[in-house]
Image (cartoon, rainbow over all chains, first blue to last red; front, top):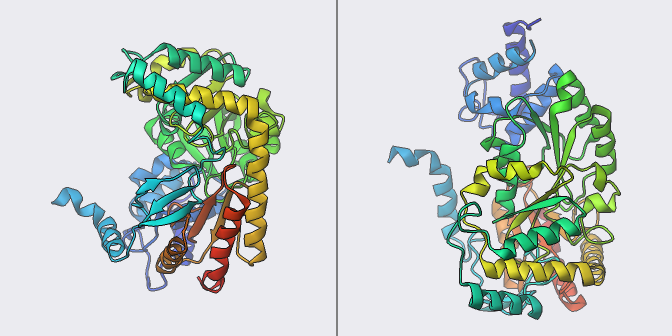
Amino acid sequence: MMKDYDAILSELCSVLQSFANENVETINEDTELVADLEIDSVKLLELLMEIEDRMDISIPLNVLPDVSTVKDLALALQKLSG
Amino acid sequence: MPIFHKFQSFAALREDLTQVETNPFNIIIEQVLSETEAIINGRRTILAGTNNYLGLTFDPRCIAAGRKALEEQGTGTTGSRMANGTYAGHLALEQEIADFFDSPTAIVFSTGYIANLAILSTIPGSKDVIMLDADSHASIYDGCRLGSAEVIRFRHNDPADLDKRLARLGDRAASVLIVVEGIYSMIGDQAPLQEIVAIKRKYDTYLMVDEAHSLGVLGEHGRGLAEQAGVEQEVDFIVGTFSKSLGSVGGFCVSRWPEIEHVRYAMRPYIFTASSSPSIIASTRVALGILREQGAELRRQLWENAHRLYLGLQTLGLVLGPETSPVVAVTLGKSKEHALKVWHELLDRGVYVNLVMPPATPTASCLLRCSLSAAHTPLQIDAIVDAFGVLRDELQDC
């Protein structure tokens, strides 16, 4: 069964907070992963591993080109967890 | 121009690098003196970052063969393998590689990069899954991007993580191609291949090993990690390069599956690339012969050098990779400016190593990556250690 989007978004924001630049105060659906959170490519791949462990899923690299915002990632995770 | 806007960060980095005396990513070898020395910035410099593991780039037999082919067959083939670019030498080299690996067939490519692009973009299809070690070389990632398979990473050298991810796939695990490297290029560690093969057996997957840095370096006959680990019969595809131990340029793939011959005509990076020039093929064939006949002695010299450098740098208290290897990487901190400064100071002391910065590094730290050759002398190794020793405090402060 597909997981609840809000629950995924909440969990995602909590993980993102620990990876984001310390100056970032709020993270929401519209936050840009690279531009707003200053997450570089090395950090992004670490972040994905962390999410994979927490949600017990594997995130194919193929989904990444379509991911720009937190919402994009949350929707991708919802699909993968279904 | 809007089309160039996305390169602003590169422009900033380039601007920074123009402020320094020598750009580490545009180093100019003014004159090559030998397998291990060159003139850089007008100074005699020990080359400790060339991947010239067996030191064959100046072997007179390789040079003579290359020169003869150049004179007899010309400077280039001016065509792709499937058009006018297959000469007798290409086929002879393929047969010799197949014989060396006791494999039914081999395919030769123009570079190792193209070999990975061709195999990974063509063999696994849209219903298949590539499961690659997270620290895989860019050519492996790029091959995956060019193809249509689903791509999943597992944690570097972590068979338990691979196992977990294969279990998640359920029945789809049978259509997985696992991809690992014999020796990882950045810090020189080896894949835990016996454990990975055990997992491959458990899920009945396919396995590819990139032996780019381990051909000629590992195994009783120099065939790489799969030979050393005693699992060659379990590996479905071995990819490698001629541009390291064999001292030329090019790539290859061998497989225990004869069907790979059908794939040859489906691989766009193979079909649409100019083939290797006759002189390259000729020198590679001779280098392969030397590897077969004298490889054991060259490997002994190479590993003696590796142990000497690893021990020397370890004694200085530097942070190194987890195991002795012909690739010895000194891990620095995250400051790119500091890493650049130390790299420059090594160069000023007549030692060239590779400066590697994120995102090319496995972590957020910078690396000073040394690679050794059988041709290095003990005195040269000691000079490399001495240069690091002078900078020890700076290296530890990075």
